[in-house]
Image (tube, rainbow over all chains, first blue to last red):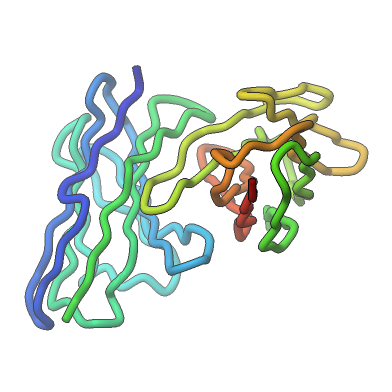
Length: 114
Length: 110
């Protein structure tokens, strides 16, 4: 159990467009979901913490108007990159938590903005 | 604040060699400690974890012991295989907040 999926796994978009990434917990209810960004050969950087039914909490330096997070249900959180630019190209990883110390990671979404 | 310091890579080993990847942490409370593995193009997979001092996490031949006196959680494996080539992340969690190390890239050559 405790499987987290992400969709799409890979997306290419043009500069100025918006992209939505979905994160789903497939076999458990996640009270909290997290969104990370990973640059090549670097560690994960926490972008925001998403709680079902409430506004996401963004880390310092992350633009909340650019990275829109919606946690509509206990199994789904979405990250929308608005007006994407090439510098937004990265690997985005979500994780879902169902309790203390339990966090399960999705396979990641590679975003390329041209 | 809480943080994790991880041995920098890359690390290259021959098959069947002994592996150690150092990890030390700083935390104000009593964190749980984790090792995650990331294969190319994939997300993170939990490798092992330890939730309190002196606990030993183990999985797939990998081991790590939670050492409170040295604030360490070093990853070890007695005999690495080519399939162990990946990036390894040390992490701690306090209050559901994860802190990751910078990752250590391991390449095992036949």
